[in-house]
Image (cartoon, rainbow, N blue to C red; front, side, top):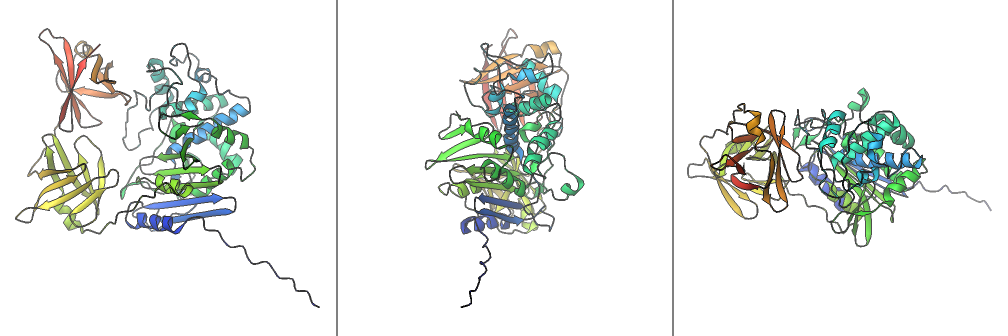
Amino acid sequence: MVLLLLAAPPAQAIDLIPPNVRENVAQRVEQGECVGLVVGVVEPQGTTTLCRGRMAADAERLVGEDTLFEIGSITKVFTAVLLADMAERGLVGLDDPVWQLLPAKSVVPTRDGKQITLRHLATHRSGLPRMPENFTQADEGNPYADYGEDDALQFLATYELPREIGSQYEYSNFGAGLLGMALARRAGMSYATLVHERISAQLGLDDTCIELSAEQRTRLARGHVGTAPAKNWDFDALAGAGALRSTARDMLRFLRANLLLDETSLAAALQATHSERFETGQPELFVGLGWHMRTKNERTVIWHNGGTGGYRSFCGFDPATKRGVVVLSNSTSEIDDIGFHLLEPAYELKPVRPVVTVPATTLDRYVGYYELQPGLVFHITREESQLFAQLTGQAKFPVYPESETEFFFKVVDARLSFVAGAGGTIDHVVLHQNGDRKARRLASYQPPVHNEVPVDPTILARYIGQYELAPGMRFDVRLDGEHLAIKLGNQPRFPVFAESETKFFYKVIEAQITFNLDGAGKVTSLILHQSGADQTAKKIE
């Protein structure tokens, strides 16, 4: 008898991405919702990567698993891993006050004798705001580039915490950036170098970095708002909040390490970032060290997302099923639903609305100004084959055609219908959002021009104080050099510029402030003029 030794059949590639997700991703790219989109899934038995779309709207090169994207706030997870790693090695303690890691004589706000710790910063429970009040943008397309360490320390020295430290979750870019800055100072190196030495080099994440080599720049996808190119973001002091770039290949390796599918030197630190668990005030949503935790159908997903000027990202995993997902896009349309759906199908996948092609000559018919109400005007513009709509006081957003006259927004659930008059020219547009509102086309329109005039600082000083717009919502008016600077609630503080002794205007948005005085010259209130509405806030202190 002859015994035949049969070779084992070749291993079959495992496809971890179901057909409905593949079709949905293809539709997002085909319909122009995303210029490029990369989805990766990892499980113990293997990895699948789905790549669709292009490196740039005007390029033919396709995205791939080695394409670099800005990953934005997923950087906060890396900052938290640095904290856990340094704590594991005895270089810091999670409950060390952050002032101990900052330059001598730095002033960090306290509340009721309690101090902000590294744990508070990593879990967004420090009491610090989302953005610092002295955050100004020299370049709106690259907003973080010129915010340095001196700016951060100056803000800390003057900020008053609104509540007890550790008592409430409030997502804070500033807090995460401060944590990264503090850890880098303790390590005696830049944040970029610290991430490279303690995470990227340990896990083999060759493309997870801040500064790119010449070769890496050839693999960096261009970011987009709609089909219009966006600037890349650079970070200074707040690098720990959002400065990293990475690839799907690297992020899948990072997920493997978090899922303990690979043996790494960072296993203890990575697991420590999952073990913290604090309430956020939102149902079924908790926060760990850097990560967020979301529960559905008694299954918990650990995740974080990110967004910069032209990119969106998602990274998450389910410890119970040992499944991890990364989604990267070089467009600003939201992609979180893809990540959540792949981790737990009970999370719905967003349907993709069909987009039709409309000739540029037709789009040009719609360009112009449309008055929704006095002081509230839509400005419709065209850039190449993309139509944009900008409402007074708001940002400009792309709108997409589902017919020659019907367009929809992707950033909000709203549509625009262009309606022609008897002569065939466009007469008005209808906004479909919480009902229908008609905006008539203006034959001519001159956007308001505000001319800045000098005002004596002694006059400006009388406006300093608190103004109540609604219960729990106040304007905080301060004097900052030669200008007033105003903060509303938890929003950033912005300067306003005088066009008279009582009237002021913002430059970052289309809005104005008027201060009211009584017969004795005492300031009694202010009026916010924005989006065609006037809202009065009474001076209370």
